[in-house]
Image (tube, rainbow, N blue to C red):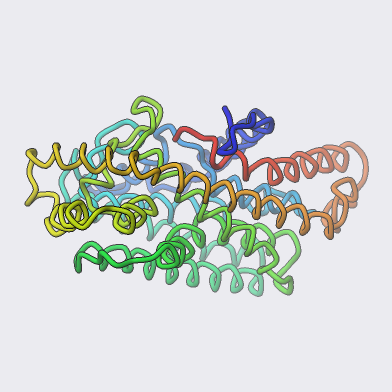
Length: 375
């Protein structure tokens, strides 16, 4: 595994190990709270996406941030489950809106069961996430629970607004967008719920309701934009067996990626007219014969170095994210201190200090991992 800059992602084994450990913890807790009694095609399917092969990045970020800043990760387990449930609920709705056919290597819920079932399952998954938010009051106390509720509301609002921007661009066939427009959408749609929300939640659990939860915002914003760019790049040039989703699906769906924006800026007038014409139709209107247009779009993106431009942009964002997390961690108590929650001494304190140190190493290694991943 190499980074966007071509150097080895030396922290990748550590990142993958931490992701796997925290995913196992989160998934076990998530499944424990899915109702056993269910009408047909409802709660039983809410477990479908979470149990498919995935990284569990958002939940891991919540737990690792808590540990890195002196908290006990077990106290952040419920917020981590909340993050994971909302994430999977959003995925179901994304697959409906995008008409996606594959998710994590298998047919999407709308492709397998129909839009009606999938829509209800997505709503049920978000309901289960809301129930986990409510459970924080008993586990963490009223003040901290309210702060986490506020963070959840803010994340949902930002994510919905970002999704609305992307939908509007496709619906209105926006072809005059700039890179700044794309980054604004990334901040709302991707950065908030993939990085800012998990980090802010973990930090609040670690340090209490009175802490400044925005300390990691720039880290999350830079990393979220890089993450989205890498997703967009993989959609065009990723290995299908590892990527787990439809290759070139963004071109079929008319997604306004950084590569597409660059192509519209660099293309000749005749080429631009062909791009605009392709984008003016919905996926169903294009039909199977649009495969030639999709192949042509990918060829033009390659000819105009649009993918390389996007990868360079992601590398710059990753470098900025790395500087941010280094600076924030440098100003935090040393991992060995263990934080106020970990002052009980003995073997438990030693284990806590080791987990805190590993969590810090995870956060430091994550930027390179984001742009080196294959799915």
